[in-house]
Length: 492
Image (cartoon, rainbow, N blue to C red):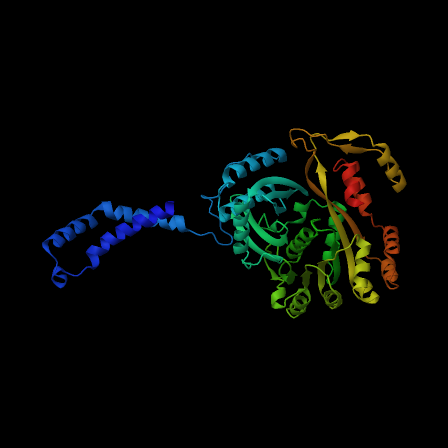
């Protein structure tokens, strides 16, 4: 509406001024006395502030109303959630965010609705936003501390507008709705910048959208930001000081392994300074890193992990970050690079630290090469942390007691949190990482030469000092950091 009024005022004022400034004299047109009087009146009007002031105001209104939001930019004056309770209480923040979305999201176009939802995700510190299509429209939820929380219900028109806007922002094919599509874009919100990875998937009720929110702090984390256990930080710092070799990180999606790699790269840059050249091939680039040559995978252009890694090796780097080893060729190139003077940081999908070796052997890596190049494997999970205000020591139930006894673990000394005002009755407050660290030893290298089973690798690693993931999780449970149920669930 403001845009239409601005255009109208601008056109009327401009037409009035143009009549005076650009019409020829009366002789050329054969003007009548009536026309002369009319033009004289128009000339007086054009010289009056009553014309020039509306013209200036109309022009200013038009500029403001037509300003477009590109990647990394948001119209804060048009689509903001407004003040929301600044509480550490998740329940209160969720309630306030839901109320704000309901009040401000209704009737919005796709652009404004998207901005509101991303702002809500940033404010709640959500890792993902899910737009699940239904028969009536769609439900929007956010994954906060690993748990999905409902945020908003959309009708069909709102959902269609939102999906269309997502395709525009991620530069996807607008008319395609029967095939999966992936993309990314960035938005600035009043609470910080969000780099968004978008995945669209066709379903029976329409396209489902999942938005992964990354780079919320605009800077890669450091070791202190991660609150790593002292033993893990010492082990990680020790392998990062090595001039060459392979360091693997493993864990399920959302376990924080990529975040640990970014913190490791920052540690490398800070500890070695200008003496180290770091290059990466990633999918996607989640944080910008100063002084690091970061390359985004682009399979459409033929730039996958293997092709990118081959190209990076010609750039004379000291350290290479490979987002993921998922195929035979990438595994072969990465392990060979680790033998020829490069420090390689990468992720491999496996159930445990020893199982990473089995995964690489299955990809065709020679046992002798794997034994020579490997430095360490870090397996990690994220557990929901107990609220420190209301946690209390709790006796273990009969079923859990028998389970712990079978594991050879102590059956007492665990905590629960019933909920309080500080945690909004949830009993949890944030998440904490738990690790399983396999440091290479001579015994492990000799064992790898015979392509051992995962069970034998695990047994040997424990003999050589590795603390299994389950034991690390139970140790956190005994200190009251997490509940026994959470430790058993995540580390099972």
